[in-house]
Image 1 (tube, rainbow over the protein chains, first blue to last red):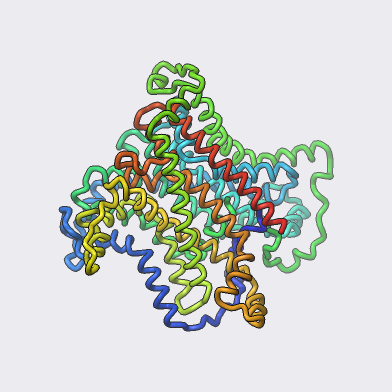
Image 2: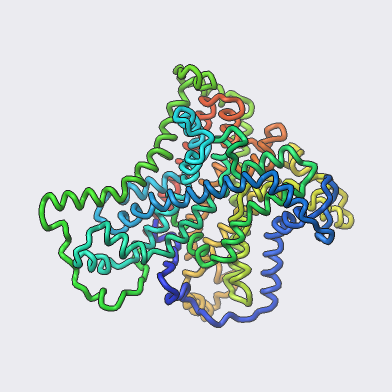
Length: 295
Length: 321
């Protein structure tokens, strides 16, 4: 399958490597294209503009929202933070937990699949990971609900962290396996000559060289866990532990007359994605193509 | 995937391959092997617990009367195929199968066509193209529930932005009940899902376009293949493997979509947007008939597996070519 898929551009250690080798440097101007491109973007991002616009409007009732937030107020945000602030913290804790857990599980596995001689077993695990992509979330939730009830994991942070990693673990393995496969075996073997075992070679050679792949995997794992709705919906039953996605969903269901705090909540829940795109763009590019390899 | 290039540290590339530590003795060899296995065990255990176990458990639950009572008594009597008979006999079932097919086909067609068009457009590089292209990813990166929340307000019949834009068009006097009419809700849900899926399709297809060597177009241009003919005879054949991946991935992911529909309509009005996935959720978590929910989940897996087989076969052929 690998031949069919765009391989993730290896984001290499340091800034020495060019990200793309194609005719870099001389982008033709083509102002008409830029105008059309902006129109396409405006069309795609209108809902996000609308989200921000409504969140800044003072009108609490369900009248037609003005097109521009001239009369803007932060009332929506103060209400949202007062009512959903705890849920934002819950999401943050769960997402960070999921990043730590997923990387701990996925990084050694990715290295093992890339460099150890497991023969056919490496292919079996890879195939199993691809198959996991076909398992519907509702099937996982259905089984986990009864298992979590027996184990006392319903309404627990650790329960959500484990379930929310169901997207991050396979994704991170595939992404990092592809990257680590690009580390020449000779570099690792040199460490063996110096007397290092697998564990030391992994920590002192492989991990530092894979820093950027780790960052990409971590960022996407964070977004997967942050955006999770299904496990939040099925594996929590009280308002005590409620991720922001579920908070937003119940908010929409109960407060439909007052859209500005709802949209303020939506904006707040979108902040990690926006921050990621602005601050870590090159990791995003690597992650999206890795997402193709994932399945 | 052998073409990855990593800068060699000076001096290390010329180092001759070391004697593998494994050759130094039997017990050492075994210990090294155990360490190697230990690297991969946590991931395998996790995948077994969070994917293997749920699939097996669902197959078993599908044959059981598994309700809230089960959680108190611990008993889940075997009922054979009763759950399957119940769900397939349910009037909602036919509707949900049809909706699943329409939702998947409509979403994939829209996402792919628009994603490809935008990818082709951005393939011609121009000022700001890189920035614009990466910003298009935003709808895909934000939580789906946030996206569906704002669409609910945009699609509102009386005060929604879409109908206000429509009413501004002269000669057009209509304000459709996008989300509350049984005939339009599915169309609206598909539309929102297309919006969500364009970034992913666009990005993967753009990546595929970048892999096509520029020289082919130059050679084609000499033979008079430009514009549509260049697309037809150069771009499309070379993009085919990527297209296969995007389409089959899209189908597998779209079949199991739940967030979009729950966020927009909750499967309503009157089950007009109910799919197998939401029907399964409804059975398990609203009616607490986990056996019936599991049966529906299993039907969904079978449908996905059929596509998986198609995927692997198409893909093998694509690799062979």
